[in-house]
Image 1 (cartoon, rainbow, N blue to C red):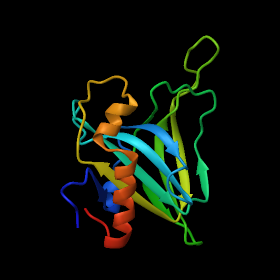
Image 2 (tube, rainbow, N blue to C red; image 1 turned 90 degrees about the horizontal axis):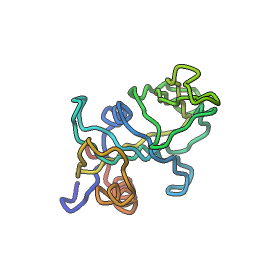
Image 3 (cartoon, helix red, strand yellow; image 1 turned 90 degrees about the vertical axis):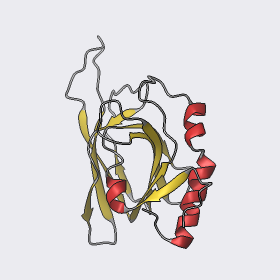
Image 4 (cartoon, rainbow, N blue to C red; image 1 turned 180 degrees about the vertical axis):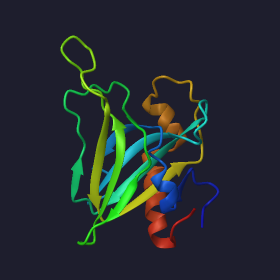
Length: 171
């Protein structure tokens, strides 16, 4: 059950797959949950151009492999993600999670040298999506850490993740 004081809720798998659409990936985190990779995102609440954003986590549990092509990429404000996550079941109790990111590569004269869309893939046993209830406006160019923490802190995300392990998924 979702506590009304919580600032974070867990999503079902179908909603989790949509978290990467038009999102901004701000951190890859290995330091939060053992054997897991956390994508720390800002994601829009809809596909409208001025839609507010929420802070979100995608937790890949039991991670085995990651492919994140960032050769000569410069990402001053994070990495743009553009597609929903596709999931392919593998034969060894793992799944392959794939989505597209905007990872521009630059030459020495600062021109983009190839199309910035690149496929990102993660092999893991499970996926969990968590999202803040609070939103921020879309017109902020750079999101400082305090603004993101005000939406929901790492501790609030961890608490929601841990409590959902006991209670089941909230949609």
